[in-house]
Image (cartoon, rainbow, N blue to C red; front, side):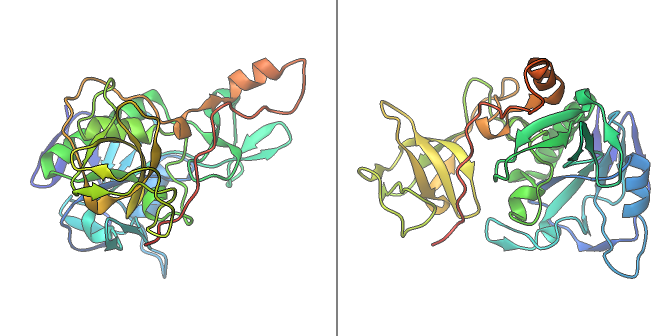
Length: 317
């Protein structure tokens, strides 16, 4: 069982190696999850603990594919993992975010029939997931995460949220949209986030309207057309796609209305936790091995998954 005492993690499979790449005092509000895009856990630790002429990076934790954890900095010290980033009105999340780097090669590319990392390693079919990123880009191959790694990530996020009263569990892709794509669609971020924040599998994230009347719009901004009548205070919503200032929601009740609302006028309801939540459709995966079996004897082209593409919009006022 993992524990935190004096901002240091302890428990089975946990070790410590100090990184020199740290800043001032951290006041944690978020967890930000990353993939290392590297060869293995040890090489990631060495890189994050090295001092370079420029481009120094670090994180609080490195999570291996076997579930082992290396802590590089105490949780009350700033590390350099988020870079140019924005979320919930904060510009630059390093002073308010705990960074977890997960050993994963990340986005792969095709060389003939092989799926290869940027550093030249080819991965077998059972380690490759075909998926479209929730921010678009088409169906591409991604390195998978192990069950041990996902379970450990969930345990870490639950512990950190509970210990520090964190507001959210985010991906680098969320806080540096358009610049970063990690941890990517092979990682069940929505499920981990939901569980860590106390959401049940049979109850999607529920929010309520706090304004007297709130317009639900066709896009993320006040310049988009209002859809139907304004929502009244207390109207229940299901969060579909959270962004920094606006979120896409579905209205609960006898309606199929979906649209965008301003985050300033909604708040989350507490939901008892009761197991892992279902993945949002933008994060469902198609294992490469399964696709290849279906395609065998018919075509060398890999089919697209049947999931619909997530709507792409930028936040605006």
